[in-house]
Image 1 (cartoon, rainbow, N blue to C red):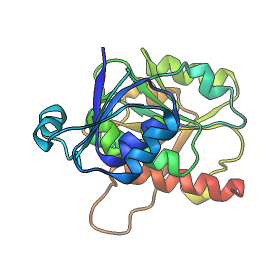
Image 2 (tube, helix red, strand yellow):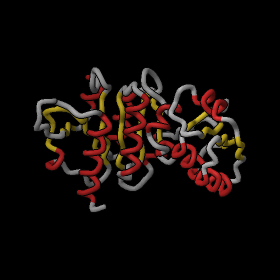
Image 3 (spheres, rainbow, N blue to C red):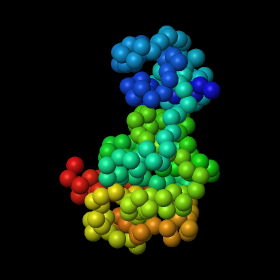
Image 4 (spheres, helix red, strand yellow):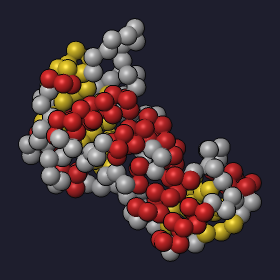
Amino acid sequence: MPEVIYGVRPVIEALRAGRREIFEVLDSVDNKEIRRASSERGATVREVPRSQVEELARGGVHQGVVARVGVYPYVALDDVLALLDPLVIVLDGVTDPRNLGAVLRAADGAGASGVVIPKDRAAGITPVAVKASAGASEHMLVARETNIRRTVDRMKKVGVWVYAAEAGGTSRTDLDFAGPVALVFGSEGKGIRRLVREGCDGAVSVPMLGAVGSLNVSVAAAVLLYEARRQRGR
């Protein structure tokens, strides 16, 4: 079943990534970058009235461009873990697709190996998430797993150190991020579930110096990912 993604950046990144089938691109603004990327991919572009784009985008901020594309290409967890010294984000029940998209954008920017999300009761890679990621979703490896606790156990068995991101953990600058590492982030309301937390090797935190006690999940992910990259020297 084709999906519709919208917005200039998401459509361009889907074209460039080459991971999804592109059925057609609909352009109501004669965007030159869209035309160029479509030509390079060999994708069909149709000029359409803005009203047709608005109808397909269903209220999303489309910038005059949508694309009909194939379903999102999730990968297996083993594909993520097979990379050298993987740096993985695990989301334990993030339900807002905008938060998921923002995490994907941070993960892509920091060069993370992949992101793991639950199959149930959590946001998936929807058009809203694609838009929030500014198209980073089209490049990032995303695995969907039925049981996050078992996923944590599997990662530990292959030598990945798994840390829960939560208040009271070891400061990010005092934790060794060298080697294979996974960072687990909880849902917007309840945080990391108890069984998942118990499976982690430890906890890591971002020190908070103001009145508010926590960061948005995507901001916290970005801070910890870039600390990992700093320690790894790249």
